[in-house]
Image 1: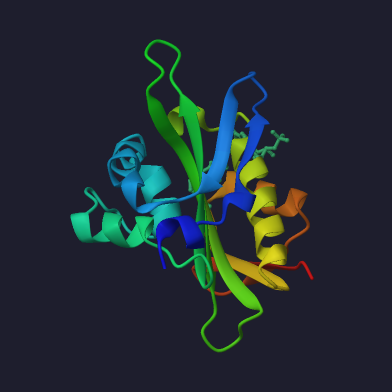
Image 2: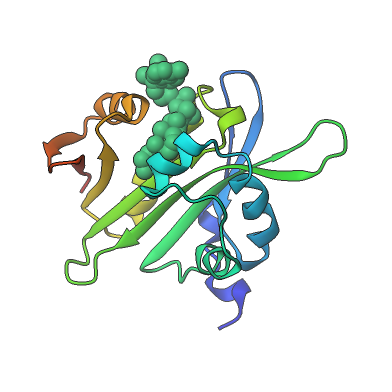
Length: 179
Ligand SMILES: CC(C)(COP(=O)(O)OP(=O)(O)OC[C@H]1O[C@@H](n2cnc3c(N)ncnc32)[C@H](O)[C@@H]1OP(=O)(O)O)[C@@H](O)C(=O)NCCC(=O)NCCS
């Protein structure tokens, strides 16, 4: 099937951040690879550790190809795109990903990350709410994520959205029924 046939256009939405920035939320696509690389470069070591649970210094080409090529059925990523004021250049400032469990098709793991320069403007909250709606639309009734215990911001955010939290040792497992 061609990209035109599988790309879920219905998940495109324009939102506005607290500071007035206009942001387009849309499903990721294969051509996003260079934009994703640029986004990765805006992550601080702490953001990388909180999102990937590893102190990654570089992202490989293979990883980028994998991140940008999803089937939109069992895996989807929603990117947040802005156009920069000075030259209208497109830039990705955050991404939320959802991966359906292999054995329990109505459950999915999710992860959200916002580039450091754009954190604290409400995007993380909006992206998480949005991926929850997308998950519902995909027939998912429960979403979960792992969060490091010192990731205060993410834990506050999940509390605000009504997630339950379970201590699983080094991390918390947060989950919410959405069906
Ligand atoms: C967690 C993350 C996605 C949140 O995104 P964000 O855009 O910075 O968060 P928001 O601006 O939407 O803030 C959400 C809530 O976090 C809290 N928060 C925001 N800024 C904060 C700060 N500087 N210090 C502490 N808490 C803060 C607030 O409760 C806020 O809600 P409010 O603005 O209504 O008061 C982002 O910080 C990030 O990418 N972190 C690294 C990756 C990660 O931890 N991902 C989650 C695990 S997969």
